[in-house]
Image (tube, chains in turn purple, brown):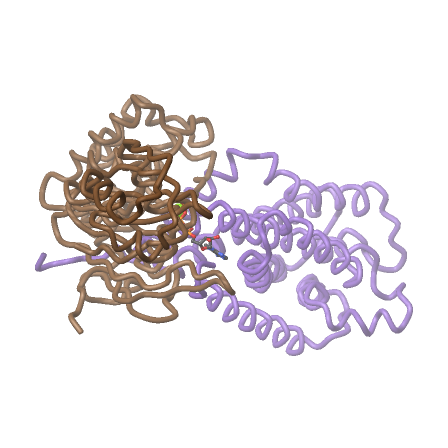
Length: 253
Length: 302
Ligand SMILES: Nc1ncnc2c1ncn2[C@@H]1O[C@H](COP(=O)(O)OP(=O)(O)OP(=O)(O)O)[C@@H](O)[C@H]1O
Ligand SMILES: [Mg+2]
């Protein structure tokens, strides 16, 4: 018993991420819709019915549907996933194990990042090949980065929901948040078409700010300065992240 | 106050108005299998959760190896099989065991854990496709794959048929080779008797008996005496051998460890006594009588 070498957090997180991804691949019924919805929207409204007047729609929608697309894995596969594992008692078994809670969070975030990367790559490829989206090389990378890392604040929100909402209620709660929030943030219909009051309201919503950053990345005009959106999303990550970690150590979560 | 290195010291835990654990002191000793026996709602699972640091006691203390059960140091030395639990359905037995092994510093070879759990033939089967009993065995494999010194098993054999239960017991005995300890909860006196070196009986959040299986069994052996008598419950409880009294009005029921002496004393004390009956009790029945009666649950710690 002289030398006890605990397995490193990195190793545990990597194994867990691998198994999470394996689970996702094995239940395409859960993962495919999150992947296909934004793609379908993009193909229909961005490529097939290209109704843009003035703005280049495929470029505009790459940012807005991209945002829509990368939020889904964070809320659904991450958030609902946690709620389900909590309800099933799987989380409790993990809590009683020596694996650090942070490894659990890291692995689930890793999966959401991978998911977001897939969504972003799909939309960007479609846009470039069929939508005549032309960006400078740096902007492509920038857009990809914003979309992929933009999923993180929503991972924090998803985790918080997963830790605080009952397993069977979680899908409903997430849907009730995801769809109206996306709509009101202007991810489906550009916010400029909204009444003034609703345009103001959008500033309170997280997807609005991620979309603003994405518009900035593809070179579209934005309403909120980047620092406002970045601060908003950082604070959101911090608040929900800390609140969730507290839930983790709460009794019998 | 003596310090219990691994166990509960005067622990209490309430959920709102429900006193799940009222006052439990329970020591787990190295190399020993402790059977925690009690009816539904007695506080067994709550006691285990306190010991695992999944719940914090309102009063008293929980310790594992002298440290806080929530510490990583404590958790890497234990294995846990909870009463309620589902595993991710699309992963295979092999994958899940590998995942859990990775959490521990010095795990047992995966194949060995799977063999001990009796799942050797099902390694590549997904968890969602296992039968109820097989799922239980997978939980057991996950509990032992970290090579723990101390194993917590909360009603491990619920829902198993007689044959799987026996196989499971074999697995537990094999696990024990090498001075490991177990805390096992069960409703079945037979199971506790088959596996445990020591049995603690818990009822309504209190330990009402704690001793070797032989002691417990002898305490629970006894006879039921029924009669109509005018003697008061207090007088009846004072008669030789009487463990508890029950019944209503003139018709009473006593449980006695020495029925002959009790009957003699009864007849001496009440000349008008009628309808006398003496009934033998099986072990299970005696156990139930002990944990279910609302009155007369005196402390019987050994
Ligand atoms: N989270 C909880 N919230 C409210 N009450 C609870 C909670 N957990 C347990 N209880 C109550 O505490 C009491 C003890 O429960 P516990 O699960 O410890 O019993 P048990 O001995 O494990 O029973 P069983 O044999 O049925 O598993 C019960 O009355 C139960 O209803
Ligand atoms: Mg229980």
